[in-house]
Image 1: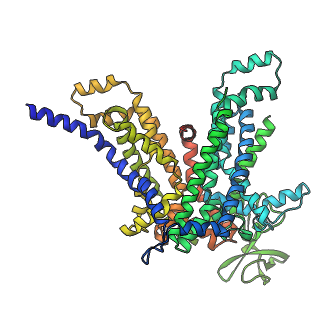
Image 2 (image 1 turned 90 degrees about the vertical axis):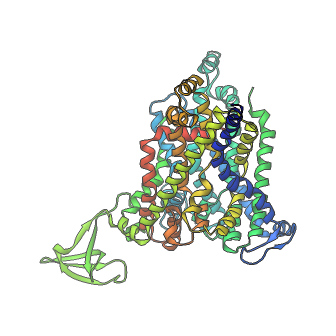
Image 3 (image 1 turned 180 degrees about the vertical axis):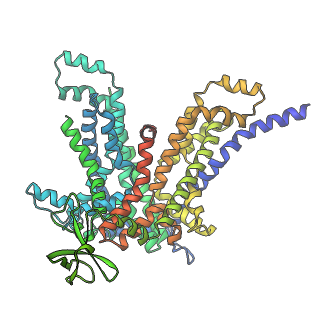
Length: 297
Length: 312
């Protein structure tokens, strides 16, 4: 009797782990251990085919002397700053308009969300066509309102603008959705009370909406920054050569070229780790610097 | 207010409409400037077994004189019976041409296999793990859960190279295994299913246990049926993300037979970078299946994305 009871309790103790096993093995193998393996590889010079050679911090030192790395870091920062600041500002403006319980809310939300679910690769090709300097729709529309067209993806400055415009268009639906979800939750009596006191739309936004949206804004700021620091597909499709004067090469694009074009695996791992720490640092800084200000009342 | 919102809606949709319009133009018309918003009526003449876009010059006694406008025979003047001229606006065969220009049928099959099996795998592993987290007590539960959540902080790019090296050691590069296996478990799914499983009253499980239902069967008879909404939502989310992914499949495939749709399309765009009518047709049929899915299940999909955002 006793043995059956104890073996039974032992079996009960093991069962929960059996349920966890499949997920845990996959996540451990492909999402946890590689983090450490990547750090390990970053200390080597290695093309996978020949034997690896230990170089210590050599890859990192090379990286900090590599002009292309600094350029990729600069480009990525420009893309992130441009797309996050303008993207969130526009999204917030639209979400506030939408939150006024207007007719057709769902139709608008649907229309705005469509670009977000379309495949990045396909729509990047479409935008490359829109940006075509000779035959593209954008230059035509500009000419209609009397503005000169530009060479877009063939000009170092406008290529960056083009990428930022594309990213804002692609991700705006998501930002609007998150802002809107929170805005619709805000208690309407706040606004009614303030309106009785004679507050105008700007003051309503400044003193009610903005503070109450704090955590949402902070959250979107952080994840949009993380997302744009990982940008790869738009530049890979629209400027496969890195853009004019390498103006569109991003960190991940640079990593991809080193790893899968030049087969410098150790070097690429050091890029990945620098990217990892930049993202971690940005997240912590934003949390600290803006956390108190934005986390509300 | 509506004016602003409507204008923004137009901006959001216009690129996709332009994609559709360009996809049914003739190659020649795609290069018209100023561009046409509705494809114009064009004349085509058959010569040497091919159709050529042509300029109509004159008509005399049932015989038309035309000049070929593009292609190898550009500038060639032909006199043909009027009734053999073809006049049309929409060039639907761009779709057939694009479909044949690269092995798109194969790309589609690969993508459906990849996205389908990844989604199924993720739902199964997530449901099992979430069930343990939500309804069982065991040592290290919170620690394991926190470790799992912590992995979400790590940018995916850090995993690219080690996983690539690992899979090439296994000999899995350019196989379905490489496309699917690394992603058949995800913290996202575990997180939401756990949350929902926790809301199910314990009484239901107790009653089932009294009736002799094992814990494993209770997962399928109670927990899963009561969480259909959450499961469908995470499944749709995973399916869309996998269907649209490019970087990982780009790295682990190296022959056309194994390429998923996005990778195939990316290569096609680099090989045929000036054939805009074909590129727009290919982009259209790449996007179309997901747009259809989106319109069918928009409420769940939007909810899925909203909640994927609100977990932070």
